[in-house]
Length: 157
Image (cartoon, rainbow, N blue to C red; front, side, top):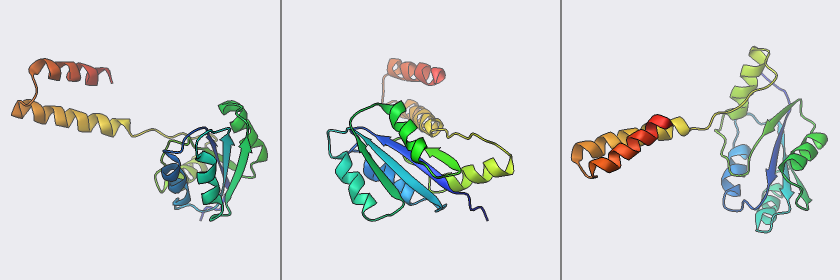
């Protein structure tokens, strides 16, 4: 059983539309041994209120509110106060799979790896679009030129 402590660092700037999903995806992680450092970087929307509502319900969340200093300074501040043996980076508009930390930490420890990243699920989106285009070609809903344009776009991706 892995028991390493992780510090999750998430800078936030005007992300009220995404925060419920992004914070929720971290709080639902199968791996529970972490602190969640959220840096509100001078947001002018309701981001800070949303963050505070989550921090009042979960003591793993540490909230830092600062005037806007930018992404790099916010990340550096988060790292400087972190207590984890590992650092997990989170964007305020991202959603993590429920087993992200468990999978990454296991892989890193088992393979003696110091740095590990994630890949977005763009590939799945491309596959779905290609399947949709094939279907539309068969039923002839769109004009051929429109489909050619999309096929060219998919080849580039």
